[in-house]
Length: 307
Image 1 (spheres, rainbow, N blue to C red):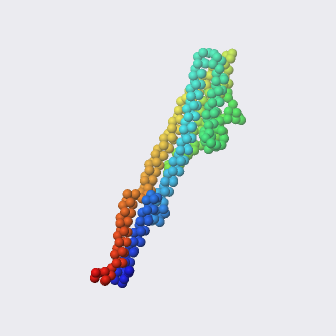
Image 2: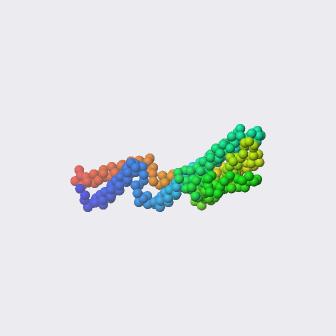
Image 3: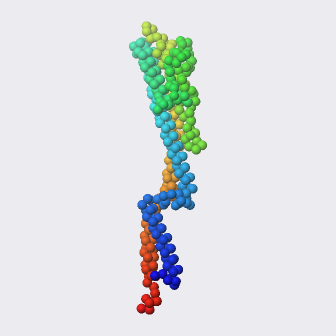
């Protein structure tokens, strides 16, 4: 029974019971979800910081995703350039052997050159999805068209001149925003010197006379041009490799940032389980003590005191 003499103590105890029960419910929810609060209001002091961190994480994730797409393009281009370089090396070997043997027809130079020309065209027309990789910004058009209007094999006057009439793209190298305030210009186009030189050399060999006599001047010019291609193509591959390295470093920075951000978000959102268990145990003891106090207050009376 509540009396005037103990009403203040009774009300204080009831208030403490409600507070303790509220803390117990909160601790039980935290232990069941592993989170300090299911909403921002429960972490009001850190809510703005959490929003900023989540925005930073989303931006870093987007950078990493974009960089991975470009990395795949560059890796594909690097492989194609390696195959083009291999074709140039094969052509040089064929020309050296053909010129030394003085019997180019025995080496099927015309046919072999045509096969290599088709292979080089295929490598430079490589695409991922709907995007041609060596076309610059004209990504929906195959960059190499050996049958393009106005394009033909080099004439018989030497030295030969560069001719990119086969090229259907543009020479613009594309960019990617790899990180805040950091752009990476990447890629290569099919009209670059090394590619043009190889295609020109192959065209000369494909159309060279090999029987009954060898057009030595044309084959020698082709050899000189393919030697230039062999010197220039590695520069293209090195540039692609440099772009890959730049993207890798950018992604390393993003991954480090994501580790830091995720750890900080975890500290804000996730509850310390051992500490929560300790608080809940302590509150359970307090709640039991409060109920005991209420029971004792109920028994207080003058009659019981005089007994």
